Image (cartoon, rainbow, N blue to C red; front, side, top):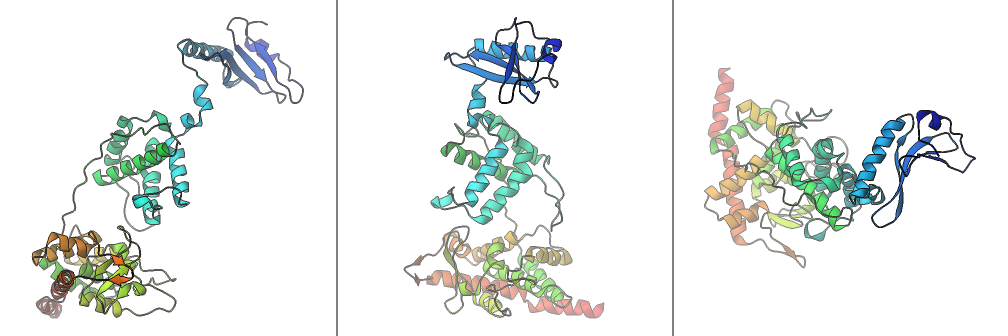
Length: 423
């Protein structure tokens, strides 16, 4: 046994097939090089830990690492061992090697298989998983994906949040509708919530030892208060009449009007199926919504609009897509074009929902009634019997009629006609 040098290491002969050859250093106990029949040589360190258990760890490959570099690494490891730390422990504990990216992939696979339960101890919905996946790929993995999960601290989670707000994960959308993916307090807060949920599930299911982000503070997102004024509703109605005569998609127009007349979420309106609409009783029975199965009262003008949509054989949706048997999905773009034509800014499909609730409030209905209209305090279905109370019927009827009147305002229509004649 002699001191390891470049010359002595290069002089080693490959062992027989299935065997290993070792050359140990005479000066640094436990430091050596291992050679396989293929000729591959790897620097190793043998030692005993504090529990007197013999260990062997790889330091690096000869050729990539010099003998001197390997010796320095061996001395660092021996110093750790003397201080009571076992450098091989992370290698033997898979949980210590798990990255944030690994956990994200695990979460998506398990959740898609229905093995991770979400709200009310039910499998996580596909729509929720789609949003989680988007946040994972857009924000979480680029910023923290390579980090070992067990090393995360609150400062790392809040740092990710700050970086998202600063736009470090902003990028153009690829090939689809919409503009750039940008940051903001709302986006950042939801990304943190997604990561915290993943870490929470991982800790509960023993993928990691503890929840490293507990205590991280999420930014408060700005509450959405935008609503359409009565003047803006009239303008939107005029824009819809003009667009209908100038080639705008009739299904897109119908959905925009329907959302304003009902206060439904865009996913609820676009995905509405004919079987769910109970026109004579004045309600829609959703088998699944953001708040689980529920019924929602609906006004006569909205019922008539839904009933007037042409049937398509084999398609269950009231608002069918142009191609295939799915539902229409471009109402948001239609709304943006309508608003642009009449100079209404800051409007999203949620603005229509908020407008419906605000008009109900203007008419004097209580907060509890408005919550029920919007599905926040849902009516329930018990043993197949559905009852929509009279207060709710009155509220949805008057609110729907008020909005329909503003959309179809005759004076707005006459003004539009006068402008057309003058042109």
